[in-house]
Length: 241
Image 1 (cartoon, rainbow, N blue to C red):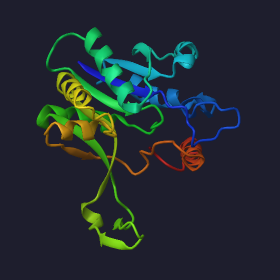
Image 2 (cartoon, one colour):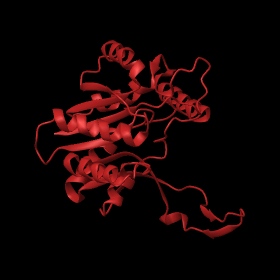
Image 3 (spheres, rainbow, N blue to C red):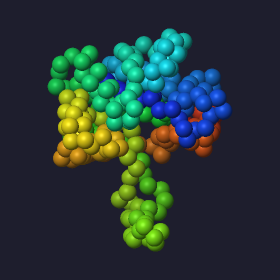
């Protein structure tokens, strides 16, 4: 079975919305960003079920949104933790409890505010997990990347052709990524920033797929307006996603 864990637990401090609405619930084309994201997994034939980790006070509102927008693959919505690490391990534990006990279960971990996700990216993630054991969706580095010293001088400039941004989905066999998270928690390594970092921490080799440049995470007002512009362009048939 192929499952998705969607993380919608952030409060969106950097978004600075006028009414303090969490960024994942801001609307674009009359639809919350989280629903834009869920739609893509809902409509993908390769996905069997979805778990959403959400801000506790918004769970009932999200349930109503699922009904309104006919999202049927969500198996459950659970409250997130105090940190991203805690939210991810809570989500993995919950999925492990309700999923069948097959060692072949695959889980795609994805951001609720990363709505530009295609069937191709989803299927490539699943295929790569089956081939290599994991799949980390990457973005190409399109600008020069330098390592900077404490005094702001440049230490070295990296070869851009070899650099990638780690994005999402990040995909694994469910039992293996949960085991990695439990190990990291036991070792007090809750500072590890994402699932790729956790898997690498326990000594696993990571494998990548290339995602499209528009696979952005909506974190700031600039990201919001970029996505809004993309949606408008698609509607006006000026751009294809």
